[in-house]
Length: 127
View (tube, rainbow, N blue to C red):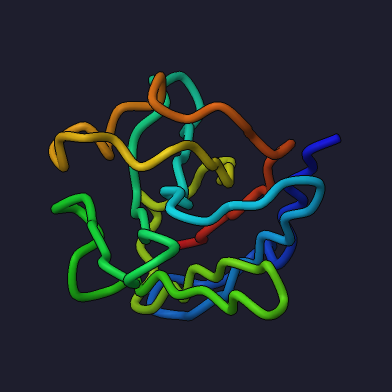
């Protein structure tokens, strides 16, 4: 049974940092896209970042480039999202997701490309 379990969310002041973790189990994620999405209150789910499991290629939404860093530890089957210079607009529930890496790179930001999802972890950034 595939499980993705997020942790690391919380309340932080604007300008602060948080690191989210996603522990994956129950599947071999070789060649997979391991990503983060978020859903802010009253808004649609949006792509945040993805890392390709095999070669470490990374992809980011424009809104987080330069502030967020995605990484993975294959030995621990864990994906991280280091978030710096957080803004109130980053307030959202953050979800870890995994799916076969799409044949076309531009599809990494599409939620429907991901087969497995975690339950989410809440991030609140106060102004």
